[in-house]
Amino acid sequence: MSSIKDNKIIAQRWFELMNEQRIEEIYEMTAPTWRMHGGPPGLPPGPDGVRELFRQIGPIDQKWTIEDVIAEGDKVVVRATNTCIQESFLGIPGRGRKQTFTATFIHCIADGKIIETWRNADDLGRVLQLGARIEPGSFED
Image 1 (cartoon, rainbow, N blue to C red):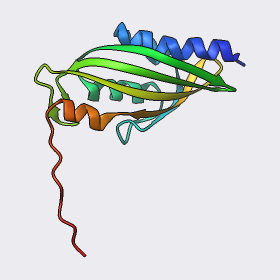
Image 2 (image 1 turned 135 degrees about the vertical axis):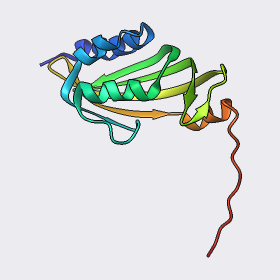
Image 3 (image 1 turned 180 degrees about the vertical axis):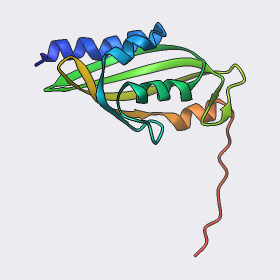
Image 4 (image 1 turned 180 degrees about the horizontal axis):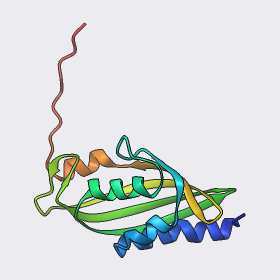
């Protein structure tokens, strides 16, 4: 069983590896049954889900800055800021524009592996930074 201190180190390491684009090492810290909530729909479990997540993200130049780390039991909450340039996000071309957004992740960790992740990010802010426009729809009774 991992300690709270060990779990915090694992959660922080996940962000370091993303910054360093060392995705293979993220696979190694992911349990075979891993699931992500709040990410792209339909990700398979385990390392294959992580592979699919990064395939969907595509080429990205990003830097995660950890703002807070809070842990209790087997869960670690990380609030972070991401600054990135990405080819596209949710089908909206990036056009080389830098995006900055905040996100909160909750990792459930057991036996040194991340077994579940919940993600809540400012995706609306990201698409607006890429130039997307929101237009009111019509309400029909």
